[in-house]
Image 1 (tube, rainbow, N blue to C red):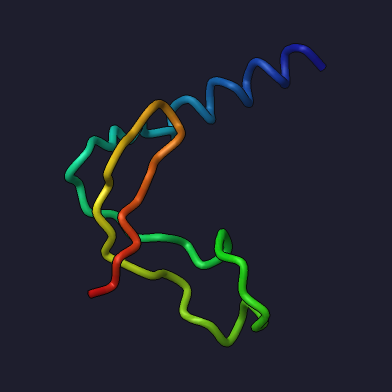
Image 2 (image 1 turned 90 degrees about the vertical axis):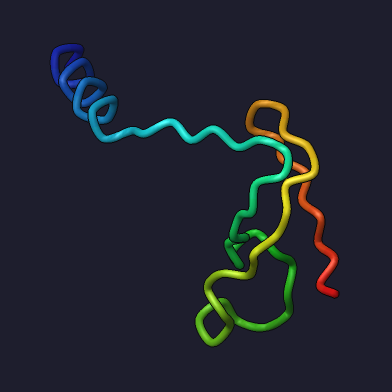
Length: 67
């Protein structure tokens, strides 16, 4: 079991690409992370482009002003 876990970890490390986001970058927002009353399937998959106001590790603050 441990050998299989090690093999899987190596495989995932090959496929993983680190993404660095900094303030001022433009990003898309996945609609899975938005609270809406409409079912996920008929809505748009991605919203954007939004400007990154602040980035601290995995926590990112977006400027959600549409206009």
